[in-house]
Image (cartoon, rainbow, N blue to C red):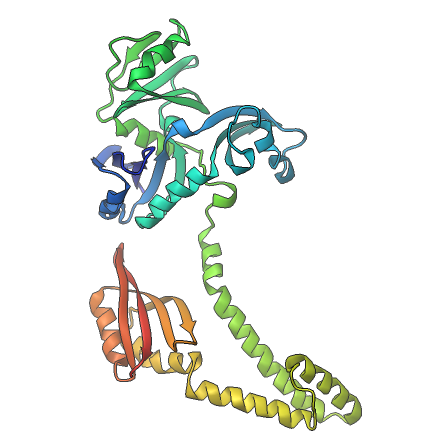
Amino acid sequence: MNEKLVIRLAEHAEQPIHWLVWSKDQSEVIASGCIEGVSRLTDLQSQASGRGVIALVPGSDFIFRQLTLPGRYSPQALKALPYLLEEECASDVEKLHISVLSRSGSELQVAAVDDERMREWLGWLEEAGFEAETLLPDVLALPLISQGQWSALQLGEQWLIRQDETRGLVAEAAWLAPLMASFGEEQGVVSLTPAPEAFSGSWQTELAELAMQPLAEGAIASRYTLLQGAYRKLPEYSKLIKLWLAPAIALVALFLIVLFSRGIELYQLNAQKQQLTAQTAQIYRQLFPGEHRIVNVRAQMMAHMRQYQQQGKQQGFLKMLDQLQPGFEAVKDLELTGINYDGRRGQLRLNVRADGLPSFEKFRDAVGKKYQVKFGEMSQKGKKMEGALTIRGQG
């Protein structure tokens, strides 16, 4: 994706959220704006269509530090990182999410934030229908200036300042002057928005066309992300494996039941009838621990199998799938992306993708004589429409 939607989340849900769509190929702004709080995030769905989403989060919530690992770099050594911040953090260090930004031997540059904040930011995005490919502190999206110089940018009532490759800070406009005074008159700063009237340090101005533009460009080019550890994004093939794992287990279980049944029949042809009887009786007790009286292992097993097969013909998952097949054959562009069966209610929930709403309606008409089809939430994903269908028997 050569176009990205960059969203800068605010500290609180009701505060303004700035956004910008940047084209890497054309090196230009496609669209930009500001929405009033998290409740309006869904307004950006049209901007996200066919584009990757990058979320910037408030740098004011982070601790940026250099840490030295006690030993070699390893997953086990990383577990010690929270305790290396114990003296600098007022909150419970075990509730921190720590992202490794860069590493040189056992020296690490890290960004630490409360895990609760991570869940809150991702929850805002998820509720609005977004899955961010990158999550980044806003101050680390500012451009890097020559060594010893900082970059600064005013966004709303806050000043974002990047100090070096892995450190930055955020200051309210009213507190910028005393903050800069603490760093001395010699500190060089390149401001991408108009410099404040009263300030300390050596300030230069290189105005950006839009305040969000340098942030968007920097976020897209950045190699950092907070989506590490428990928040690491799974590759697409892992998602597919997870999606189809339950159906695959069900198919394997069905195969094993059939294989076991065949094995019982083959064993009974064996000349060692007494040994076979003892073995099959033991297996039968494992399968049906509630039954203590065994007269004829084969007959009792086959009775259970006939019961299960009869139930499968009368109702259930396999019957519904079989009877829905004409609907899938009638609508060639309908793709099944997920399935869930509720045996208690006798209904299927299908996640499907098609060219448009007429395809969903055609499928409903094709199976309508036997089943009720209820449309769930629909959404446009590129050229395809995705949605959920809830299917249950008529009456």
